[in-house]
Image (cartoon, rainbow, N blue to C red; front, top):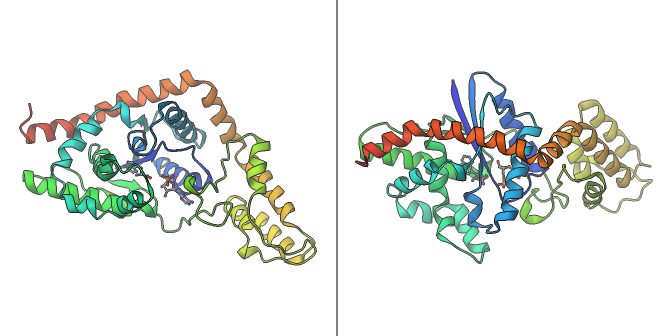
Amino acid sequence: MARVLTGIQSSGRPHLGNILGAVIPAIELSKDPKNECLFFIADLHSLTTLKDGGVRDAYVRAIAATWLAFGFDAEANILWRQSRVPAHTELAWYLNCFTPYPMLANAHSFKDKSAQLEDVNAGLFTYPVLMSADILLYGANWVPVGKDQKQHLEIARDIASSFNRQVGEELLVMPEARIDERIMTIPGTDGRKMSKSYHNYLDIFLPENELKKSVKKIVSDSTPLEAPKNPDTDITFQLFSLIADAAQIEEMRARYLAGGYGYGHAKQELLDIILEKYKEPRRIFDYYMTETAELEAILEKGEARAREAAEPVLSKVRSKLGYR
Ligand code: AMP
Ligand code: TRP
């Protein structure tokens, strides 16, 4: 039995990059009965950059609805909001006192964020400690994350060993990152990595007309309609290939190479396949975004179970440190 744990920050609505790069692979792991999956919404982490509680709440609900829309079984596994389980912040404090300052000062995500943001708060600095607490609190064995989180996982391991060494006992379980190297970086509409911060993302849960507008924005070159086109350098083709099946991909490739097929046609096919392939997830997403009481009940149930699951490690840590 492996404990698999991951979190998504509530700093935006999940986009196609998050879904293909993080949500679907994590749900695959959750389908294996040998795994016990704990997935949470890192709504405390998002406070480092987002201060509006109303906006954050809408993002939290959108993330929960996305997990459910892609088939996460909240009965067999656990889904919860980090802020509803105070053990995360309590353990984070204890771990802060076992974390060498230079380790945080050298973290690249802190260096990058502090160079870009105006509000360089201490929460950004101690972000990896709260993330370590999220993981170590539940004795997680595997943590599926994107490549950008690799250093945060190394920090979690370093903090766990520093803690264990200083208390003289292997109390905290050493977590392992599960970084799927096969998962490519999903390109955004401008060809850079699809990201909230570049405003180049596709939100597959938007109403059809709005989604169509974002698909139309996908950048293409100026090859005329009649001329053959290179599918391998085109963003619309790349996105289509991430969603379609092999036969559909080959068909589109042949159309590009033959000429007489425009980028507008390809974009329409991309839109159609998103609507077709994600019809059911779109329906379930809308359902939970409207039936807010039902979504709330699922989260609250998850939170009660998460509090219980967090108790053994937290009480051992407390007593080891002499807090009664
Ligand atoms: P973020 O939105 O950057 O906090 O990322 C949440 C999760 O989605 C992480 O596991 C990322 O690695 C993954 N992710 C974000 N953007 C992409 C992308 N363009 N391609 C693949 N995975 C992504
Ligand atoms: N930092 C992660 C991200 O931005 C989100 C996160 C917070 C997380 N706590 C976690 C991921 C614990 C895995 C495990 O993507």
